Image 1 (cartoon, helix red, strand yellow):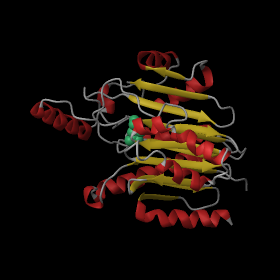
Image 2 (cartoon, helix red, strand yellow; image 1 turned 60 degrees about the vertical axis):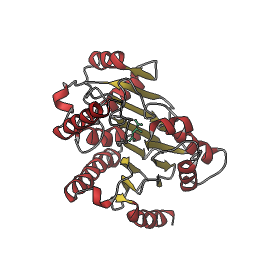
Image 3 (cartoon, helix red, strand yellow; image 1 turned 120 degrees about the vertical axis):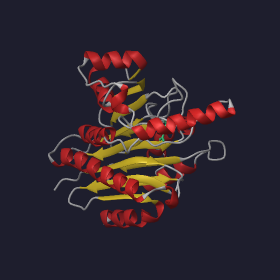
Image 4 (cartoon, helix red, strand yellow; image 1 turned 90 degrees about the vertical axis):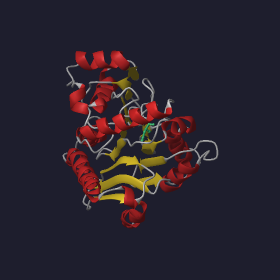
Length: 322
Ligand code: ASP
């Protein structure tokens, strides 16, 4: 059987066990398993890595427990603004969107840009009009804004008025996927609602190619999550690639090093999902918690949340390296 594999993340966050209720934990695990399956099914039928990462990300964009598409974080204005990017490691074509609203699947819009547009990155109303022109489904705020997110926003508003100053942006999550298909092609996709309470118009690392998303055949595919300002300043997705390509680092070494890179100057949560040309995956994070999953051809899928579950991943990877 030809090698293929998919790995996904649903964001890295600094939270403690006591801050996550069992119901939500279950929803995360189920959501990761569903997204993995959607991506794996594409690869199993001989589909491309590009279609597989789109399918996995679409699944998480539909699922309101993740910070992408429906259920995503709100800006200070109480509105959704989405960023997304997808990259084909074979052709190095990319498609990315920043600050879009109303588009049901931002990653699909990014893929249409990759396939049809001469530009790489469209933002705001231009991106929305491009979605309209390509008959992509649009939705109103009532679809995207879940009661939980609306309540969280109201609470923030209340506090803001109390302290009469702007609250700084706080962490959220992001979703992403990387895949290797039977033809040896790699792809990466990332989609997010950005940081909770971010300024209107703020764009994070996700659609910045080389910042939050990167893929190049024969080396790696990378999707990041965490403090977007630090990730884009560190150009972390491309650093993983560069450390592998030019310094001969293994996937795991490069991913771990990127988690530490410039850490004295670039503070904040970081999560990096990467996959090499053999379909091995690495999950680096400095948060203790990263929603993640992996499924390779002819193997059992696994999903994990806490750092303490990392062992499972190590066993899998050892088995794969044999
Ligand atoms: N990286 C995303 C951003 O800064 C947020 C996240 O991953 O939680 O927009």
